[in-house]
Image (cartoon, rainbow, N blue to C red; front, side):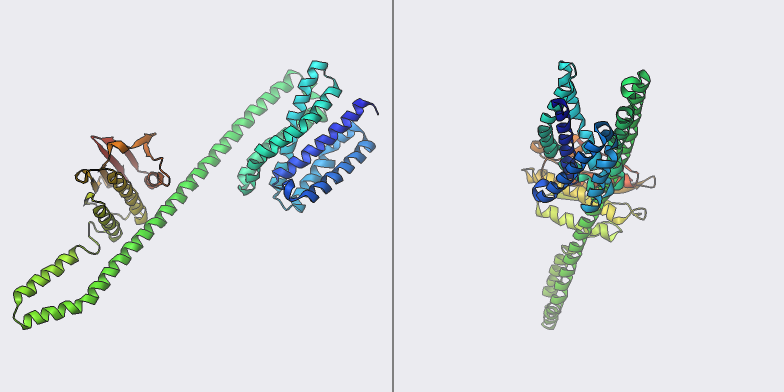
Length: 426
């Protein structure tokens, strides 16, 4: 065996070594945790390749590689490592795809030496380990995440390496059309790549759209859940106040009875007025015909009062039957949350205010929310929507927009004369 033949054989060994390790890493089967499996797999496939090489020769081995090496490796990952069939095929076909840089670098360097096969085999062998490191370090961690995706996403990532694999063997292994087919083959490849690009792009855009929709729906569910929690807390507070008043009622009646028995009607009337005054500032305040909205507004009115923010709620709308009330409560809550947070940053208490109006016009529900804000913390807009760089903030606006979109409404956020405004029509 000549030195050129020996290096050709060594290159085949490096190809096998590279392909198996990359396939296993892409299938989320790292070497550090499965050293024995790696050793047995490399040894088994290595012995098989030597036998096939000696029995069939280099050309026949190259042509039979899909059945002798690739298919058994896919089955190994599928049934021994218990991976999804899509993941198994993506791992092996992607490993084959990643062998292309090895081959190209070898060809590039050999072009300076009259395309010497010896130089090409030496270079491709030497470049194997650095390329393997780059793939394991920077490519594998991302491909591994595919196993958490649905079948549609897996299919998209499966198509490209599969098509490349088919074309590679069709045009360079089983035929030499890539080199002898002339302009017809080149134009076919160009057209095919362009067509494949647009098909994959359209599928990815559709998939991204579906994912964004799912994220918005999930955000709505999260905010609705949070809103329900707030309503439950408010109801619990009302019930607590009612229980306290029920407990105190006996004492109130005893005191009034004593006043009347001692002929002290003035003192009894004064005591009644004190009880009435205390009852006015407890429990749920009524702003409209809907109790859920009343609960939310009462809760935020108390919250604003605690933070020394002046609130004005004007609710003239009466028909909320078109909406899921949790959506409206979520919309109002997020708007008031943001408004109170903005007002808190104003140093002067006299300048803190929030105005909310809910009214009906042309059979549509209109919402106007405005609040003051600190000039040192002026709202920042991106694509006409306010954004926040604070950790844990910024989701409220997204939730509000999701509710508006759900009911095919329109909304806008803007500032005017030192006032932040939110307007929506549903």
